[in-house]
Image 1: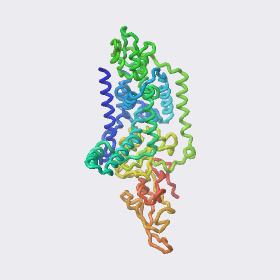
Image 2: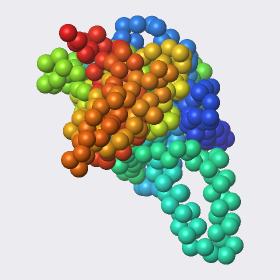
Image 3: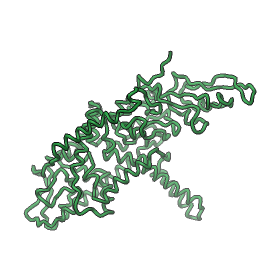
Image 4: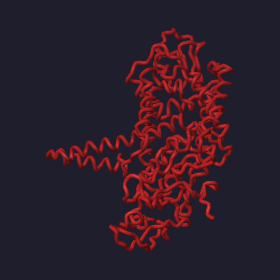
Length: 511
């Protein structure tokens, strides 16, 4: 019976996650309500590492504190009954054959946790790379969901092109239903989608080798919850009726060693209650008591080494030529509302929600534009899509305040960069061909791009032209001019991070 309740709970929270994930998208209004970030708000690991990295309590996540306190009393119930990533591992694990003898690397996730905490203490927010909920949302948003969209669209496009009687008409009705329910309003495309998908599927595939491989050996959130659960009052007890059949050991997805009294690891137990459900003699029971399982002996040297490794990682990832020269990467255009770069990196957990809700698809995961520390953080790529002038969705979904939630009037005053014209590629400048696209699409109330009368030459003859010029005071760097520029390849007008409001150093110095 407990097993059925747990599966129902897992199914409920997985469906809730998927529902909120699909709702994390613009429905025509500049308001999302409460998106899937509720799962990130409930993540004690992201709460703790952000607190350490920022040394601030501005983001007081009550849900994360509730989960932490609940774990202190009930143990790792979150891992066994709630976590959608854990549920996916359970589903994949059913497809493979688990090793008869577990690898026993359970200490590794605790050492990973200590390394992440040490990095955070020195202001390097690396937890988002390995946190299971951040990893899950990032993988779904930037890889799996876009792949699903394109696969479904390709299938129905093929059926439509075939024009098969009855089948084509029926498929169009189904496709219309999918577009109103499961498919994205804007077909998403992201750089590094293949890489992120391979990493995610590879992690899930480890469950084919050993059930919940990630949860047992690698998950830093599980390690944190394991430490919090050492004195939990919800405990497993075994009566004298146990005959040592070992059925509980084969049924334990966490490798907690339930078949031996000396080897029982209470901090590894995820309260799945499989051992209670399957025990042929009824000797196993879960109840409230002051008992606790065997403590975790991580070894002092291992703990010190993991802390030292986490601290040493900070200067290593920050040694880049641009950082040392004090020069900002011109392509590193952050979303409006982003904090100063150091503060932004201390808070951003690389969850990908801001990129998912971007109306134009212009927000893309960074590779090395912001250094190793900025891996998979959002940056605007105007050639792919601009920053929509009347949109503030990215600030609404950010779970840590790395991107501030701005009002529309406040956002209109924020500069994220500055457009620059390349006269060698601009049609009126270089070829005497009339073009006013950049001026026409400029969204600012007082145009940041104006056309000036000039005289040029075309085919050896003088012609009257109107050449674009950027107003440095009015341009906010939204990038729509670059997006719409008719010059293919490298556009004739491009946005750089120069002049961004959030930085006092990256400004255009005027004589």
